[in-house]
Length: 215
Length: 364
Image (cartoon, rainbow over all chains, first blue to last red; front, side, top):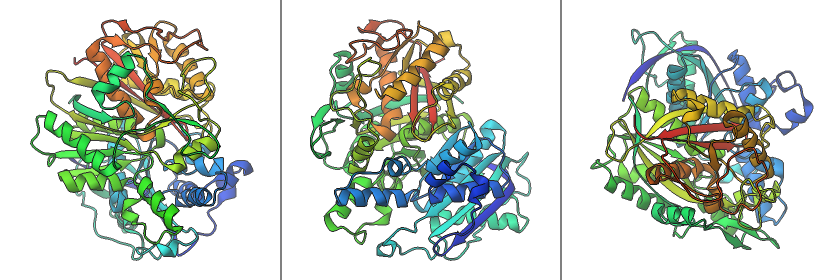
């Protein structure tokens, strides 16, 4: 059990009750054929990465439910005895969003995806810190939940924002001095799986940018 | 600190570790031909004998704890790797009721499995990884790095995936499922076998008498296509080279390559090319998915266990199912070969062009 300090180099967040508008998709993904295949998580990922001015390198992605829309399409196709869409299947895996980011930005570095329930963003931050420590480079950490699917009201009891995401670019700090633990700086109504990274983004916006992380 | 695999166990279509290795050395595929999942079509599937994935996780993990030098896992990090998590149970509820209402969101995702283990064994901390078919290879990658930076003394890596309608029918929709036992690297191969497994490895910073060392880990992204590998094989080459560099070894130090080898046309073409370009025609390479099928998120950990067993046995198995080798510039064994095996590289590749390679070997 080891703690290190990370500097938050840049951060971004975005959320909406139903659908996030204007994710600047045409600029971020100029190729129409690719853009048409992007999932909601992928579009939010591209947007947040751009807002963080991430220029390539290791990426850590966290999402508890990840590509819920594609998974729901597949489940409904099976239920109705319909043929499955190959695109829905390929887009249903949890690492879809960082894979599209890699494909569009031609980033050939490592991608790791975590899905640890309501502690997902804490696990993602720990992993991003490890990757920064190992590589001695800046690492992008992005956590997203897009759960705006038909009939989500049958199961959603935890969030009023059906699309939300937050991102930070981190680097390892030289020492532990003045580093602080992640504060409970929640954004009310956001799903718990994102609250740790939301807190870090909110801390960064309030000029607290040196964070202690237990690996 | 160095990372050692000290204890392990698994269950797959061929049974436990001992039964699996007997099947591998007897060149006997454990794939069965099923008509249960796809309407009017057959599929070769790797099916385990078990009641449910949750009790199986407890059973296999308990066996590893019993073998180990630990009394409990209270000082151990759990890294669980899966591509479907709790999907099996949720699919059953949804297909029976046509509604999400009675699905417990906490039992849908990857954490359904890690939370279940955590509730039973009370780990120090836990996290779950899901990078499709590289999930458990990436869990081993992170475990090696966490031990290296002295963050943990003990890490339990668990790879777990059960068969689901969505995965079997999904691969069928891509046209890559074989209707027979798969034949990796064969000229006439016709696709992969989806399979299921639970595999558990205890990674520690202390060496014991029969430890296998995780010497190097490497990963890369193709940045090419969501499902097709880069035909130039640069991503696969980069992943293997990064792992060998991390191990501070040379190409010639690798005695055997446990390939990803799914038996799809695309994967085996590209992986063969990567092996040819990086290793030439001398180093032995094969795919044990001819026995186990493709256990998806569990594949990296299943094949890490197989690699540990191959190092200990000193026998590289023949390629099961091979009739006519497609790429004749690589060295795929047609019979079991007894030899001194110091280092193995194990490959895992996934959707999104996600590549991970692990170098395992006798302890330095």
